[in-house]
Image 1 (cartoon, one colour):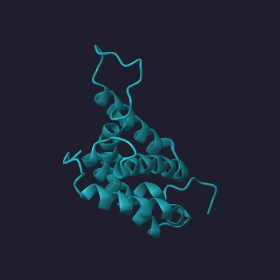
Image 2 (tube, rainbow, N blue to C red):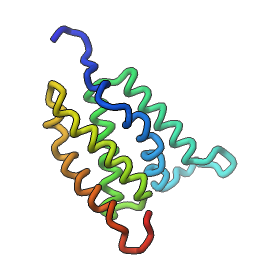
Image 3 (cartoon, rainbow, N blue to C red):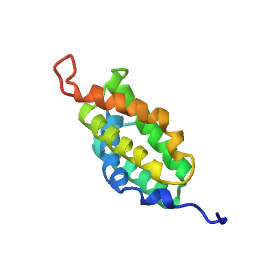
Image 4 (tube, rainbow, N blue to C red):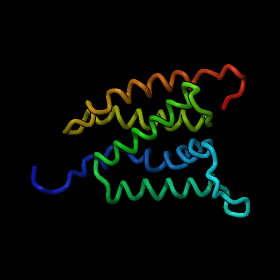
Amino acid sequence: MSSHRRLDWLGLTPEPERELPAAVAALRASLPRPPTASAGGPAVPAVLEAAERHRVERLVLRGSRHSWLRYLAEVTALVTAVATGARPGDRAAALLAAEVVLDHHRMLIGLPGAGYGRTTGDRTALEEAVRALRTPSRTGDPR
């Protein structure tokens, strides 16, 4: 390959950039609030969603395959923490994010490079998370 930057990863599917920001923002919203969050400012979830959209946009426009996969690994960690009960979170948002990232990772098999092999552990974790998240929680709370 020439010295040009590889962009084949951008053509996989638009779902991650379209659907992940809102889902990831919902997952981040369940984290403990920073002490600087003010009651008079915009709603934290709206701020988080805008920040997440900006982050994804930056990754798509200026990032690399490596930085994109790092971001998706971070999303996988959020999802699996909710799925295992290691932290509270919106189960519907976690399920959506898990399905989107899992579909993305499965499509990596069609691209050159080590992306598919690199995401093997994440695919396994996401498959388990999807199974867990599709099962109603024991507390009766669907979230």
